[in-house]
Image (cartoon, rainbow, N blue to C red; front, top):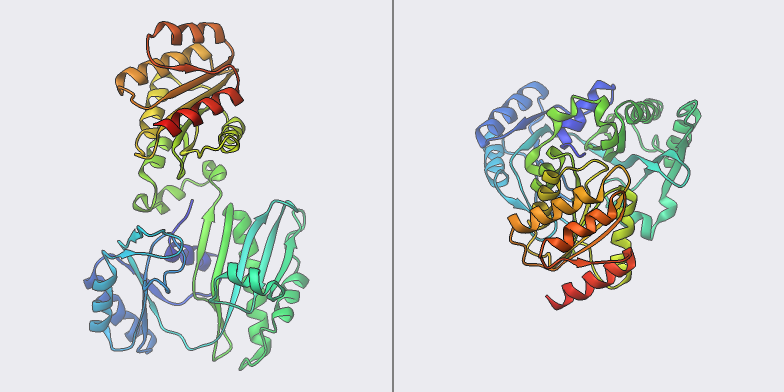
Length: 399
């Protein structure tokens, strides 16, 4: 789950991580009022108006405006941003509509750093990555200058050691050129330590600051915020519901969540309906192996009803790219006859026009196959997962 920059900064402030003063706004009028308030409070004549979307590269896409000419100019920047279709390297060519902006005080920047925490699955630990190349696309730095990225790992038993924060500070030479090197190093170490605590307590999958700046007075400030939460921990965080911006989410994925299904849209043409995340991933892999491209990840879980199966078909067919559907069910808790009834009901209700291949195995499989045969519908049966994948790829290519 992703949240906006300003929401991430509110969480930063909760953990004592320094952030600039800022105000989220939804209209140009609010932008003007926020700019006036910030200029009056800080006595700094510069504000920055930032588009709030769930994608990186906003600055390069024209989504960040530095305003030096007062509240009226800030209002004009707000008018230009709110409602625009912002295109970045992460949104794709269709872009993302800007519905809110963040107005923030300007700061005198002396240096830009990069700091992020992620889950490293290879070591099964939280990795803390830092670089002197703040403000840059970290992917480019990793590809062309990997030696500029320093990494330490958080021990799951004792947490991040103070010596590790200092190791990063001295490795990046954060005090170099600072008006007060000791203060800068101390503040940097504090931020690293607090981010490690935040990452664990808030159940994050990513916590990134790019850039983390050193001001001309030697202060270290989080000028940006990118926080992703681990959806597996949603049950521990009721507050996440208030942070979610439905306008930034895929509407089909939201519908799936409400129906108790796990759905992720992809860019292929073969719809997949599977029970179990592992089997769903294997199904996608075998479709790819035989030359096809899955249109989605869809796990109906272990106890789907006939109604949920119909809902799943509707979600699959919401994509105009779908040229065929592969149902791959291994019945354990899930009964094959229930799935078969759902498939037949969905096919009739939706007047299904695309090819449909069904592979059933497990509990009540013979009754499930009988229901499909007796339906009189054009449903292609498969004897195995490989057989089903080959059949649906061939049929989709003919469609």
